[in-house]
Amino acid sequence: MMITAQGLTKEFIRQGKGTNRFVAVQPADIEIESGKFTLLMGRSGSGKSTLLNMLAGLLTPTAGKVFYGGEDIYSMDDGKLSRFRSEHIGVIPQGQTAVHSLTVTENICLSYMMYGTPQERVEAKKYAAELMERFDISPLAQAMPSELSGGEIRRMAIARAMIRKPDVIFADEPTCDLDDENTEIVLKILKETALGGTAVFMVTHEKDAAEYADIHYRMNAGIIELD
Image (cartoon, rainbow, N blue to C red; front, top):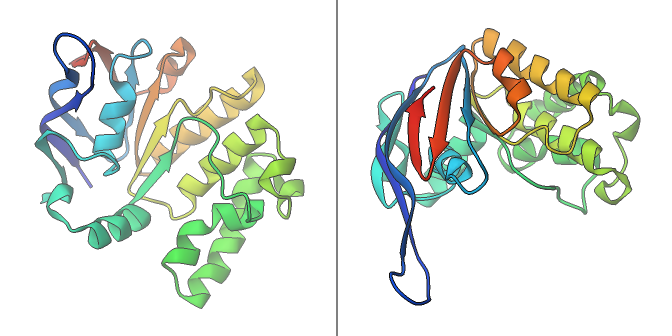
């Protein structure tokens, strides 16, 4: 599935002296291809995460459109868009994200708990076990998030993004809580996922990620350009 953004823009209104209009993302055109690992680099505050969230259907743009296979996702109503995200989009968000009342396995399988048949949930738990093995968190399957380290929560979140084998994975600083060994593991898995046909779009400021990517973009002051 080709993801195409046309004229994607985000402005925020904020209170204060002078102008109260802040343009976080200047009009951007970008294509994200299936089977490609696309990397977006730039300094903190350059607009990378804002762009990612718009591409992932999580933040409504001020202007512009985002097409998935020819359909503008922002023309969908909230219910349809929520289900579309669950079934087609995997997001690895920045920061520590977990439902603290659920176990690690339940967190990873969360989308199937929301949208899934009983049989799909059974299969999801089997695949979750495989993912936990790859990310070296198998012993934590029944642990609660409060028992996990920051790096373990991060690996759980990555497994959760991959559980549905989505068409696209959006990764926002996915290695920021990880040591060198686990960073390499995660980058290799994301690369393998892209080689398997998934579109992978990663935002980072870590230069080591560049060697894994097929397509490189850079963002500065809300402006994106091919690097």
